[in-house]
Image 1 (cartoon, rainbow, N blue to C red):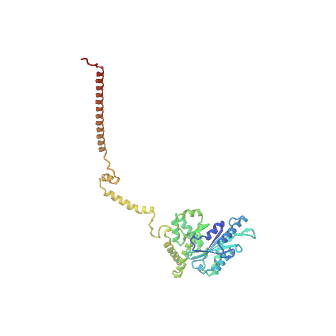
Image 2 (cartoon, helix red, strand yellow):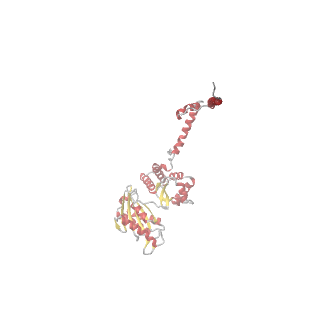
Image 3 (cartoon, one colour):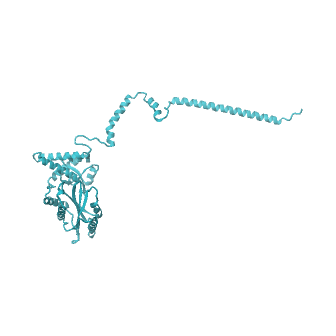
Length: 392
């Protein structure tokens, strides 16, 4: 069983989220202020009223929102009374047993989980109910629920914490990229996954126990983890837990391995095998053999040698008159005639210039002859004008 919860505000947004269809196959309002099967409008009004009551104190987060998510298959045996009892157990451990609450059931991918929202403002004391150490309270509630409902007991979270911390710190400092760290963690039996809220990155061990990744890395800040893992495609926390627990259960059922060390090693190998089948694309490569990169950049890199080899072969087979062939074929490609040599162009231009000069010289000669004829006509006309009439 997985229980997650934290204090929050913005009740209007939370109300819409609880009733949003999204990937949910079914949504049912189980309870609002003790009223069964309430309407959506009643849920919105109740959550808004619980949230706004925080203004009566200095607190800004008037709600506590928790999720109760049983292991696969165990949710099928829970009826409405079981969900109410689970909410009672968690509310008591959190100190919210006397506060107003609302319960909404979501069914997704054949599994059902509960969302429980409590009002944090205590109208009798005039103070907010403390949310300190809520993770420990969630752990106590989980153990009580598993015992009460007959669910499989989840191993204690902190049993192997020193070993996990030492291993993760070593892997973090030995690797330089997110892909290398995720792969190294996977090979050592850990799954790096995405979380939520204040714990955006989680690590799941071979028994299906999840931890805040940043808290396991000594001297490493959240922004450093974000920077390294920003381009990695990671499993969600719930999916990682499901894979790890399934592998652990399958291994225990097969009875393989003897001794603590061998059993642990076999569980790690099985868990990693399941993860590899589903998430090899986390690092873009398998355990031993790199996967082809289908991106444009990867295809360019893969084909570069072929292109280079082809170009070199072409150049070796290219005749010495390649420039001549190019010039001859250029006209076919561009629709233009091949460019002539400099000497040929000069000879053609010289002939053109000579022709132009000859044409110009002929025109000048004709012009001069015309001017001479006009001058002769003027002189003749002047003589004729000065000559008097003949007397016979």
